[in-house]
Image (tube, rainbow, N blue to C red; front, side):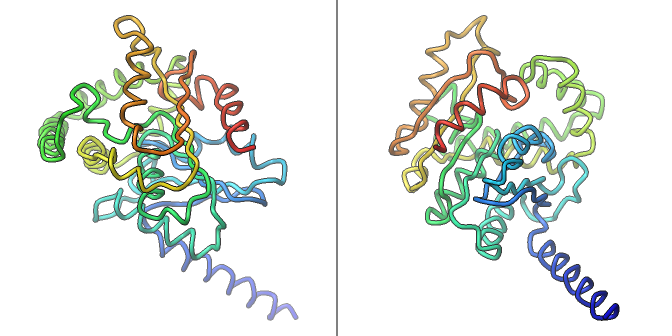
Length: 287
């Protein structure tokens, strides 16, 4: 009996390792039981940025949370191929292999882009989509008329500039950027600690890919009801709220039935700055 038990346990471990080998573009932590929710963090972020969200949705027995940490971010091993196409392809396979029935997909920033891309390319897999402060064409926020070719050229220049920076300059720029994205210093410190464990080339290449992307037409293929949560207070001293809101409205114009809501008290990391507001909006959307 003991031998059979050990053998069964070993078989389970082998299956688990095989499943992980099928998606080297991300690690998955699964919590709870019930209707599936997939949570995708942003650039250089660990899955733990969603800890509060997991506690809110997956402690009740109604939902099962599948929390990703992307390869090359927050201590996860980097992969050789471009991260975002690999992550999208492998996430679609993960949904199919694990028989996740129309999961809710929630993505922040780069994770929101990945959620959009998944829902556009695999519209029958995603049940509902929540995008936390992300846009279909981030590189075109100031000049909406930029073509895909111009966006790529702009992103290539940015990539070259970031790769030419020395370590101290790169770190200082990360800290400067995070101060516009998170309100409290202790939260900034926690996020930067995780970012330090990220592979620099993966971070830069993924950021460049995001800046070159244009999903403004592609999102018309999304079938999932979609909630977009935007922010504006980081720019309130020189750009009015309505101007920021109009960028979201314009970029999501081709997504039928999209609901766009703007946070009043949160910067880019809404789940950190104002989780209660975020939960309230998502609760209303999911019900």
